[in-house]
Length: 362
Image (tube, rainbow, N blue to C red):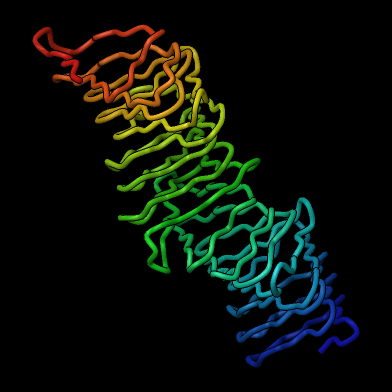
């Protein structure tokens, strides 16, 4: 239908149970549009400026051979399931300020989503041929949600976790079995301000964002393997749960760390590997707190405090820095030098019991 546009401005349209293919633009400005319970295939631009869109528990397939646009009214109409399959590097552009809202599952098969917001209540699955795009991905449901990677990744956009309850969780999982997840890109941020973001067990996670923003009500649950992070870390009242994994700052540049909750948000294992003379600046008055082992591989820590419960090991490429090193545990600690040194900083021993000891070893 709609070889020269399909427009609904009043009355009722009911799509029934068969496939509906809209060859040109779909415009809904009034009336009630009840979609098919099968698949509504949209090949042109889509605009919903009024009336009512009833998804009828069906699928909407955005499939075109070129750039297409989606515009919507506020509040955004709800789609049940969506698949985006535009073609290699072809774009579906969501108008700035508008939201493509999916209540169950969206499959990102091929193409890009650009400009506006993709809001997901339940599941977002990224396939191998997905070409990214800068549309903001927001999880905003009132239950648990899932972000899956089936041979693909989505970088080049902001990601936001804004679930209704602080105990609800977005589970990021590796569907293709390569034991790795990659998220983020320079100039973009991961923001968690409602609920939790957690990762599948046994998975290495590469977070390429410029910024991680942990805000009140938000929780980042680390992998039990390794998170590698290239950006600035800011915790202004959220929670980090270490899951007995490793967190590596590996930015190749100057980075900042801020956490106003200090010992409530410890890392388990921490590695700093920024590159020659590159600096991780801990905010003045803040502490980078490590429960198990801090591995200082390459770069510097400046300004604030590195607080260690157990072990700090300095490797040969470490470039010093004026950050204060404090041993703060309730047991013995170890301070080791693997052909490296850390000079130019204060070194404090503040263990809980007078009988506890920091052993310095070569």
